[in-house]
Image (tube, rainbow, N blue to C red):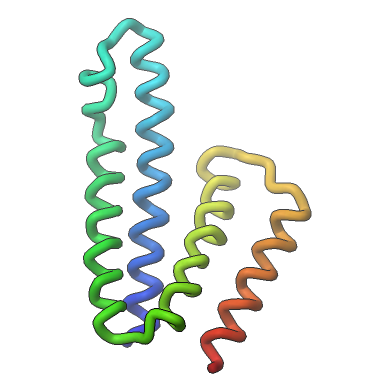
Length: 116
């Protein structure tokens, strides 16, 4: 159950980051069109991003109440993996080989830590 909470927390945090990026792109576009920063920032992606990050924080508190911090916190690095992969698909970002090697290293580290 604890590991499921970690995955849910990381997933919500990742979704929050994706929504924030979508919102930031829209803010840039709307400001270029002459809208004020307040009007531009009040878009659905920003609101969804804040909501997802809030849900992720709540789930993280549940994780902390059930797991040792020294085990739980390194698992948050799954967020780096998920955001990088999501960036490739949602934003068509190029991911160079050295980042894939970094992702593999993070995953290996998580596996080693979770076995302790």
